[in-house]
Length: 289
Image 1 (cartoon, rainbow, N blue to C red):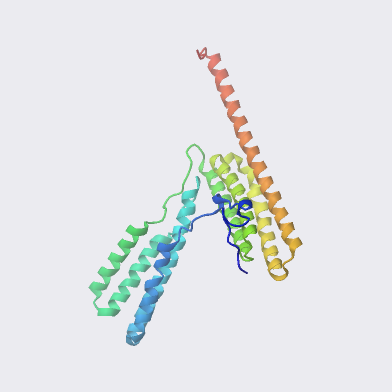
Image 2: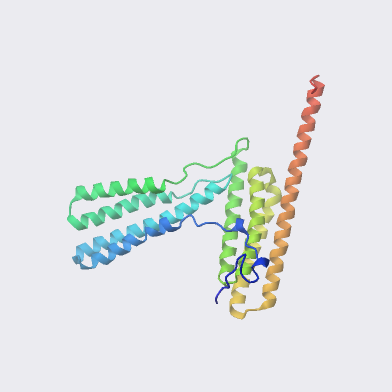
């Protein structure tokens, strides 16, 4: 199904707004995707190199393809890590593994070309070093906030990871039906959810009030998106679409209201702390001029 082009100066464009905050540039973009090209070329030119040359070329190409895929996923994981105030380091150091595999693939390709082990090792080392220089390495430590205990921050990181997974799955399933306005509607919900995530990251004490929203409610929304996308692709049921939009509206309103409540509670807590401190200072005989 073709999608109508929309924008500020398009017909009806003034009535459609795309939630800019929901649009994220793919961190594993053009630079990472370019690395899928060399292994394809290598495999093609290995076809006329005899049995041993073909085997070495195909293995080298496979290693380089795996390296390119790991790099792309590593860049995405690093981008998600950088966006958050509280985050755990990636469990798998994808970018480091990508550099190692890329170097190994180039070393095998070089050995298959001239049979020199020394030259192959040198080519592999240089490739791995250049890979690290170009793309860096993975974050190697957890990102934490000072003044908040590690246990609370680990709880927040786990809940946020789970919430982001639900949001991604939900957006992917809705995208399958190729309905741009509905995808944009999901994007507005993502903004509301991520506002709550930021609030919880800034003050993990809010996790108790937000956990049901970021866990149970988002899991239900994900499941509803799965069932809706399957039904709508098969039947195009307009009433099902309307019901799903109503669900998105309710979720967005409830997430926004809960986030506002958490911010209000935080302000009340701050006011209480300030009042208590001022009373203590006055009891000590210290009064502001």
